[in-house]
Amino acid sequence: MWYLTLHRWTGDRERAIAEVLPSHLAWMRERQRAGQVLMAGPSPDRELGIIVVGHMARDAVDDLFRDEPLVAGGFRDYDVIPWEVHHALGVGGFDVPAVTAMLAGEHS
Image (cartoon, rainbow, N blue to C red):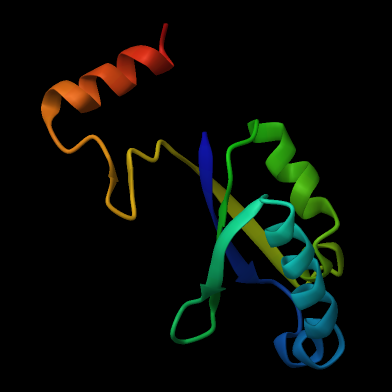
């Protein structure tokens, strides 16, 4: 299972950017190199951070974000949306039999 995580500000945003942003970016680099974080970036208004997390158990998502500097510092909270990725970058099943076979394989 992949996960889409939505991160919202809960603390002083200006202070977080001034004090924690470099640590957050270093954390993101490490997690991307480890293959845990696949894609990330803010919404256009910078109110929401969006992070796509690679294949892992749901509990591992919370373990992953426990030490994320903005979350650990109390500046952000997050929601986790489980995501069954069937198509990515032109790869995947693009007809009903292919999608049906993928779903059957996940539930067998």
